[in-house]
Image (cartoon, rainbow, N blue to C red; front, side):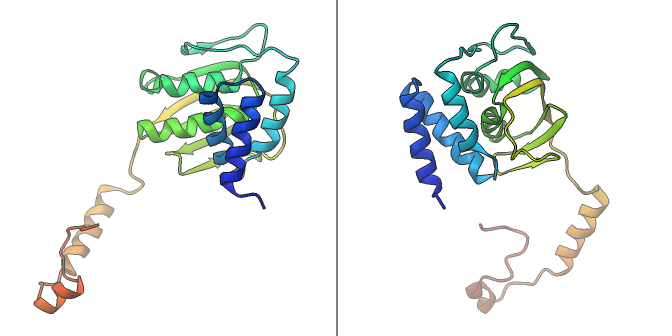
Length: 202
C-alpha cells in the first residue's frame, strides 16, 4: 500500500509535468492525499484528468459568483477549487451553484479545506448525490464515489450553521451531574491530577 506522503509527492510532480505551476501542483498534491485518506478515488480521477488535459481545454474560473455557468467547456476543478478557497470569506453566507465542473471529485478537497477555514460544515449536492464536509476532519456521503464521475452537473454548495446535537435540558442535566461528582482537592489528589473541578487543563 502506498503511503500518503508518497501519494502527495507523486501527484504533485505529475501535475507539474502536466503544465500546472509549482504552486498549483502543491495544492493538487495535498488534495489527492486528502481524497485517498478519506477513501475517495483521488489517483484514479487525477490520472484521467491529466490525460484529458493534454487534448481538451478546460475553462478557468477566477471570480466565483452565486451562479456560475459554462456554455462551452467544462470548468477546471483545480482552478475553480483554488478560486473557491481564496474567496471563501466572501462566499460563506451564500448558496453557490455550478453547471459544469470536470472531474468534480477533484474539487471536493477544496471544499473540505474551506470548511476548516470558516469553521462551518459544507453541503455539496451534485448528480443526485449529497455530501457533508466536516471541518476537513471527515466526509459523510449518501452515495458511493468509488466510480469515476467525469462531469458534475448542477452542483450546489451551501454552508450549514453550527448547532448543538443536544437540548438545553440535556446539557443542564449533564452539567448538574458534573457538579455532583466534584471532589474537593487534597494534596494527594493535586499530585495525582484529580479533583481539578470543571477546569479543563488540556
